[in-house]
Image (cartoon, rainbow, N blue to C red):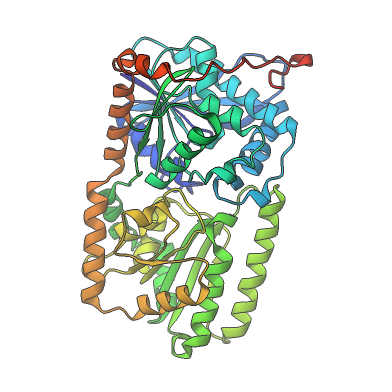
Length: 488
């Protein structure tokens, strides 16, 4: 099988290149080792004078990258508009932050259609398409409109929220109808899948049998595939990274104090304000931990042109300043706050240096930082993971100190407990989590999804025919707009 992987963002995998998101970091080893073609944005746009997509191809391990310049007229509405000002807040249960126009939705659909046309050059016998994440909810339907009959799967890296939140997204019904053009839709957790099924059952009234939905597109199987990491490789990298200059300088600067670490994009879903307030509460309630433990918070800015992100950056910086002013001393800074990214190698060394890993998102599909922190630890003297119950990783890493990120005092107690946890308990918790990481690796995630995608194409008629009797009539086709726009 020839595999074509599609995402908005790609990674070239340079050793010192900062990773800008968990999706890119996760897909990199899959593409390098599988021979897949990874298609995504080049980061550039071009004007409408060029109608047909053009892909620039470059090698990546055993596979290749195909980089596209997206249409300038629609990129802003697609990316900053509908994808990140409507879908992202809704998927993270922040419908109050939805800010979107009708034009943004049109641009989102146009870019999905543009990508579908670009993928036609890869549509050969034996090819399967694997579409990644919320940027391309409608890409499967666009491929089907172009006559593609190959297996097309989709994996959602974010959470899928409850039905009432989904209904706050403009054109939600149209989008989810389009998603049912996929043969297989994968989710991070059982809860995400159940939320999706609840919407399909209540709002679309479609027949569901054994996590399979039948629509006018045919059969769509819904699966759960928790994404993993290569724990052994990450552990080896962490052991080597302790000699990196950035890591060595950090170690020397600690002067015997313990370190907690948080590594996040600067995003409202990550719970940064609550986390900082928890450390403030911890130092207030436990004065003995002043000068004894500090926080290194790496928060990489993103989507700065979106109002909610600019506001958050200002709020976090102001809160860090307040907490440092309250608890700091002339020769000690409680929170080291950095707005820049690091390559995976350096991050692995920083994780290994920290006695506490703090991963406390308000909502997260999986959160690979949690898994990377565990894998990076010294087996003889491991640190402790403090993990939000609302991260998908909490379903697997259940020997972490699992916290409610809305409970500031509870988080403060958990961080203090992590700092003082005896070695025997730390090792017990670490070994249980490492065992889980080894058994649920990135390679296993990849193999499980591809096997399910292949199965989803097998003998469809035997299952579809008895179910179609109860299916509603096909939905009406999309109506063309005046002026060349396709979506009303």
